[in-house]
Length: 219
Image (cartoon, helix red, strand yellow):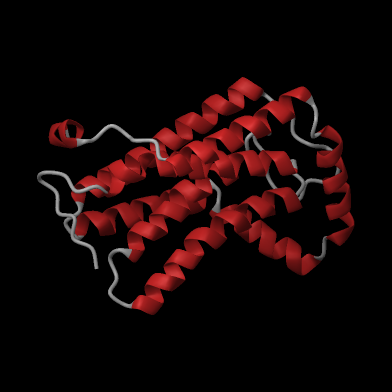
């Protein structure tokens, strides 16, 4: 554990990461100033009549995999597989990325303390504050980057493409599910995705970079 901390490079911020974090900041300002109030409400009013049993089942499933019950097992599974393939530093850093993302999300919730929407009937569970969406923030961290790490462990190109596609599609689906279920405003999920992707990009170098004492083998 000591060697992990000693060899861990300080996260570097890329232009892409700055762009995502800037988008989060812009959305946050619009939310705080109330500029998006009417659009947020109108969007949920449009979604309400479009609900149907099949879509609701799918969206509840998507929301579930974006909850801790779906993400914690995935996090531990991928970290374990990466560890067993000899990339121990990457495994530790993936865990650090996830924990730090959780902390950043929680702090943001407390800072903005936006009430949950009550525009349409809620079809799913909802915790405390609304902005930013925790599901939308953590899905790119746990599912997105986790599947990217997993893709590095396989040799098959078709499987790699599938994992990369899922790494993009699942966070988007999770974010949309929270909007569909009526537990978040559109700006909640937009801000959450921007924050989550930005945080992944901030940590990308330190999670995937080669370090002394840890194999960087990838297929």
